[in-house]
Image (cartoon, rainbow, N blue to C red; front, side, top):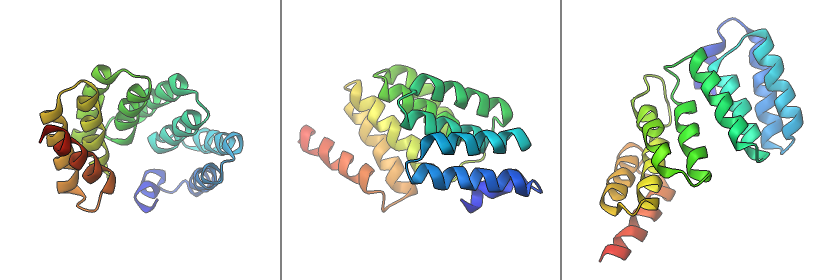
Length: 165
């Protein structure tokens, strides 16, 4: 969360609502989380608050609304990588891996993104869904190069190696 704090600058009140929204979301109180994110956005619109607002919507099964929130986040700050990855992940969830690929590639290139292993791993899932296993393995390896302890990427890579050998 510390890396997210920077976007709020001197807008402490907006940060507090955002942080409260995150807490509520982690407790499963999604409607309350959405309200807190909306309060944060009303005080100081950030790509972070809009992206997390979308994430809460996705937890409620409102995936198309979550994608729309990510587009709004990108409009606020196109350098923030999370909404690109989230759009890709939501498209994967909707069974649209080919549409997910350009969004995940953008996430990998975003200037401001702390968790770069996620779009690599999500790209692996997209290529895997398309039956493009060598490309999937390349993406999982890329995720592990960034975060060697990323168990999900390691598991997927080993699963694919087992299928190919």
